[in-house]
Amino acid sequence: MKSTVFKIAFLLGGVLLSQGLRAGEEGSFDLLGESGMTALRSEAIRNWEKGRISDAYKKLGVMAAEQPYEAQHRLALGLCLRRQKRYAEAMESYREAKDLGGPKGLIALLEAEIHAVSNERDQVFSCLRRAARGGRNIIKDVQELPALSPYGSDTGFVQLALQLESFELPGARGRDPFSDPFPLLSPANPESERKAPEAEAAGSRDLEVEALSRFRTLAERVHSAYSAGDEVGLTEAWSGIERLSLKEDNIVLARHRRQYRDIRSGLQRLEGKLDSILLRHHYQQAVSGLSAMQTRFDLGDYAGIEQLNGAVVASCRKLRSLSSDYAPVAVELVRRGGELVRRTAIRREFERRRPAVNGILVGEGQGLAVVDGRPVRPGERISDFRLLEVSSDRVKFAYKGEEIPVLLVGNRNTK
Image: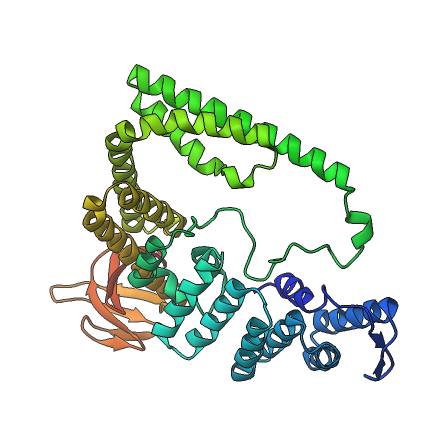
């Protein structure tokens, strides 16, 4: 994980310091007020940035002692312990933060990470379920936390994501697991960033007008495409409405809410008629995405397979939401995509670890390859790899259940 991510994560422990704390020298702290609070927070962050986690932990311990009911101090202490790989103590701090009203989704994610370190699969899934229901994008989070990344290709995990209403696509814009999960001002210069209430209200109105305009335009495209029998145009416009994610509860002004209800009412009259079209579209999208994954896998082009799988999962989720009859189909498509992701991970690991093929000898028999400087015949092992075949332009290895060809070009070998 990049150091900047950890820097952002550490800010969680210092952003919400209450008034009444003063920092002294050599860890001696007295009640002083806002200036002392700011100095203490700055010193703790400086220690974090320079990797002096023990010093940062001590300062946070003083904060927690002075303000024992402040959840964010406990969470920041847990992040320090996490950095030191003191996972049992970190888990205790996370739970204390949760009991004090800390962010349940983020804490559940951090708990999942600790269970993953201990290979406790059931507990990992339980925590990830709570993280998703607490607002986390668990697909994205799992990709960004190394301890959890193996679960991203687990079929059980993908099916879990399918079942959750809060599931989002990987790659969607969002926060990483530690970036500003609270609606707080930056600690650097909060007053300069605070907008006047009038400016905030004007900004909200402008955003609502823009969102409603887009919503109205997309709805008109749906009606027009339906009348013209244009299934492609209809599904594109409907997908645009889904991406817009405009909800009545998020609209502030009463007149805008009335406009939204009028537009939505017109769409609802069409929704039953659109089901068969949308089912066909999402099924075709899922099958097409799975086919693209298979093609890339067969060519050894592994870039983007996880993203394609995310799109397949999203299409399957929509299939299930439109018709329970499609649930078995959706589960099977998700299973196949998850299997390709799992196999891709193995092949990528093979590429990082694979032995060097220094030469081959092909005769009337099975042939022989010089691997890492020693002769190896088909069926023999070298480290974690077993040589399966030797031919004039390639060799084939077995690794973790995968049969992986290595093409030979001149004196070099490529996948």
